[in-house]
Length: 77
Image 1 (cartoon, one colour):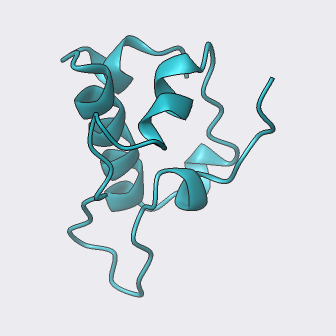
Image 2 (cartoon, one colour):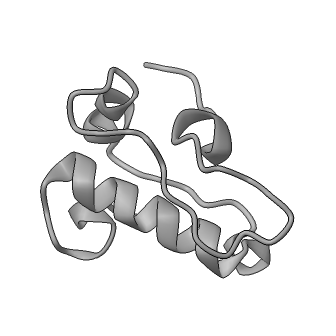
């Protein structure tokens, strides 16, 4: 079982002061996408403290990687 990893590290959510428009470079063919694809559960620790742009970016990465338009690509969060 792969070890847990931080959202900004695994998904490469670009973190900056303004955090207005964020887009992760991870695509379906990226090796890091395999972590998301194989995950049975995604935990967003302290999600209520997460910047809205970072939350949206994580959600969009899951949709893109899973090729699924459901929230978080159909993953359990």
